[in-house]
Image (cartoon, rainbow, N blue to C red; front, side, top):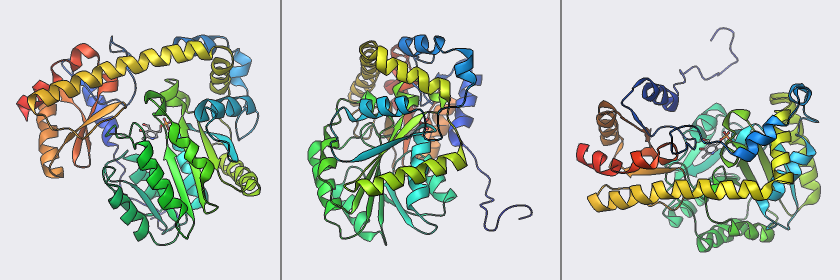
Length: 386
Ligand SMILES: Cc1ncc(COP(=O)(O)O)c(C=O)c1O
């Protein structure tokens, strides 16, 4: 097409999430379970007091200034890296700041995959993986997160190198998490493949789960395995609009990692050039000066979320509303037979002012953005309508 590069994807991009979010905002009677952000019990976006305090201490000059380098401010990178790893990774690793968790995923894909390569991600997953795969002309294989054999089959089916995305714990939208034994089996499978493997762990929501013990398995990876962690400040610090995250690459070869960090820095320079300086200063200040205060607020936020998910699941069980098995996280997902019945059910809910998000073979209910008093009885209402 005129002006555009050869083979540019000219299919119209429709963002299914933001259109329903906006429809919900316009409906005064809405039960709004659409937003993938944490809201408080008053129905307002949840913010961390310690982050707000740190934000207020940033000077105008700091806010206006460029960050120290395209790879981010060193203090931010080091502190967030330590915060994410919690001392569990002794293997060689490097870290670079990114534009949200999305930026980390972008860098991993841009640096490791070429047109026509295959990417493997969960069958029911964050819709953006598909958008990113299309944008990069990748072939896609999907797997069932509840069935390790299916995952292993897909790994075996992938031609060329294996590029696997795992979004555990708090999988969006299922709330699924692999147990330590499952992680051991996954790592054994990847370590014993006779080809290159990139394991991209999307840990956007990890701070809302109980543990990250499985990181210790990254100390025993084979030389063929590169582990990339994509962390997000959007969720961890309720910092959605500030667009900050961190990519951590783990591998046995220090020399490779040094080169990898360098080429990621170049990619960052060529893509966003520089990140949000004030945001990086704030997050670093919180982790350096008020980590305990932050952890206390985080634990309260986690508790608030858990009360909602516990209540919804208890009431869903009580009335026989079928859900996918949930461990932790921002969302629960109603199980649908197929995407036709999903569309009907989703429309029925919309017609009754219940706003949710369609996902593959399911309907995502964002309990993260629904106060407990609204959650109470919601499963019964949905069951009755469906
Ligand atoms: C599964 C998953 N991964 C990554 C992200 C990235 O978020 P951000 O780019 O805002 O850090 C999101 C955001 O919704 C998500 O749901």
